Structure formats: structure tokens, C-alpha cells
Length: 466
Image (cartoon, rainbow, N blue to C red; front, top):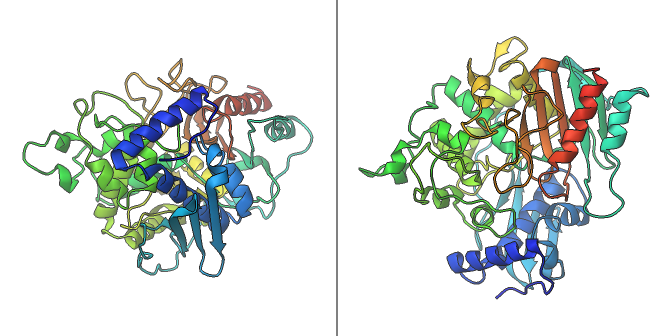
């Protein structure tokens, strides 16, 4: 059984419950194997995709996760820069490995498994629909309200928990008005998306709709749900995007919940999610869970050709290339399914380019990238929530049930919609102000640091004199 912390706190209690549930579901060694898998994958991405020091990645992106701090004395790792592989162990055993593959980012290997043989990728032409985002250096504003915004955003608390801001980028009327990076980061640094990936997956789904590969209101076509009379066959792609499938998927803020097991223990995460039974009728309940976008990712893989290289080729030619997102990487599992719930990496400017696409109703450089009406789907609230389709919307008051944080950003205009990722990753889009704001960094404040981001938006609105 795992070595457990001796001092109990409310968060620790949640961790212990999750450890117990995980152990019951996947055997008593599951928590140790999850810890090793999570560590190897986060270190691989941090070192080989983001070019950060391993010790810093471990401290900020691993041990900063809920439930992981107590594992520090028991974790060990090795970074092999020649093979671009990371090995992690828990308590001297339970070894897991992740490997970096050119064009695909880091892949977590099955226990004892070999790297997948993903296909070679052709070169792609990256366009530049917003030339102002191609500046050779960060755009540091002159003294005034925009510089004050950056100063406040990069002023951290003297004691834990820390915000750890790595990048802030403000684009107004398609021009950068404020931009700053933490030491070791810059305009080319690709930073983890966490759940901002769900918003990128919404865009990728839109390009598949435009290509005639996916019908948003049609069935998913997932094979496990194809048996006669299976009620899960009624689940649509739109329900996955809105997280209203009715499946008994769960998502808890710990490092050992069933969602984390799906991502860091299962060799085929989508198959794990696909086996989930219904809790309620499809379309009748909203429940946030990574499993929805894991299933969507399997749908996209299958509809785009069935292989990882098909997904990357499509993403580059229909989305990343037309937007100039040259610093964006999709991570995959060993089955070639994109990790569309949580594992993209991109530079702050690439995240801003995605925001500009949605600000301009799916059009970039005069070219329609997303189908007409696709952005409206993203920012139309799912009934009874502050969530649209892959994006949050700023129309609901109160807190997200069970989260204790607001649905939206109270100091931003009501027409705001935004991508929100774990540990404080944001792309905020405000059509009425012609504004996109990006904030990135591994915040260790509970609640995705939404109140901190709301303060950034308050400063941005004030800087525009609104």
C-alpha cells in the first residue's frame, strides 16, 4: 500500500479517498504507478517541449499538483537527453517512461512497452494573418496602465501558494499592447495548456466539421456503443463538447482521481472512458470531466484517418498553418489518439492567435477557418451553466458547483468567453472590446487562479478606459 501523509487536511482527506478508490478500481499499486507516470510525462513535456530545467518542472508542474507534494521523498527520475526519454520511479519501483517524438511531443509508454511508430510528417507552411504577432521581441509597454497591469500580474505572493506567472500577453485591435515573460521563458517558449486543450479541441473539431468529417449533432460512431439498444448511441459530438453526455464520468481536483488514472495509467484512455455507463439520459446534465474530450479525441482520430499522423497533418493544414501557430504541439497516447482534454503545448502568441480566430468569428487573414456559426456554438451557454462548448462564457453568476470559484470573470464584460486550464492557463476573448488576453503559468492557488485572472481583466478594462 502507498505511504500516506501523517498530517490530515481537507485536501489530504480528498486525496486519501481518491487513493482508496483508485486502489480498489485498479489494484493497490495503482497510485504509485500513476505518480510515476504523471511525473515522467510532465517532466518530458517540461524539459523537451518547453525547454525548462527538470528540477523546476518537478517543483512547479508535478509536486505543485494537489496530492503530489507528499510523494517528493519517494520520487526519482532520470532525463536522457540523447534519447529524449524520461524515466520516473516511485519508492524505487513502479517505473514509467515517457519519450519525446519529433512532431508529436511526449508520449507516455505502457509499462514495459516500446515507443509507438508514428509516421513521418510533411513540412507545413505557416501563414501570418496577424503580422503584429510576429514581432521579434516581447512588446513591453511604456510606463502607464498596461505596464502597471504587467507589474501586478508578475508580482507574486511572498509565501505559498504562489501564482508563478510565466507569460501575460494582451492583444487589442490585433496588435500587442502588453507582453512579458518570466525568466527562462520567451516568445518561442511552448507552455502546457492543461484544459485550454479543450478549447483547441473545439477548434480542431470545427475544422473537421468544415471538411465534412464530423457532424456535430450526429452520433459519435464509437464502436463500443454500437450494440443494438445501447442508449449511449444517442450521445452526440456536441454533447461531448458541452460535457452533457450523461456518462458516469468523474473529475476530482487530486492527482489520483479516476480521471488521472485514465490519463496516466491506462494505455488506451479513450477505451477506458468509452466503457463508462450512463448515469442519466444523454443531454440532460452538465458534468465537467476530461473523459468527454478524451472520447471526442478518439472520434477525431477515427474520422481524420485513424492515425496520429493523420490528426497532426489535418491540424497543421487546416488550423495551425493558417493561424501561424508554429509553436504548437499536440500530445498523443500510444494508440495515436490526441490527448485533447489536457495536453497541447503552445507559445503565448500561439494561444493568442487561437483567441484572435474566435474573436473574428472563425476567420483569419480573410480566410474562413471555422464553419459559420461554430464560434457562436462555443459562446452559447449550456442551459443552467456558465459553460458553452469547450469554452466558459461570462453570463452565469455564482460558482461552479463543487468548485467554489466563479463560473466567469466578474470584472470582464458579459460578452466575454474564455478558455480556462488547470493551474491558471487562460485565453480570454472580449468581442465588445476587440481584446484577447493570455495568461500562463503553473499557479499553485486552488481554483485555477480565477480570481487572479479576474484582477488582470479588471486592469485590462481600466487600461482601455472602459
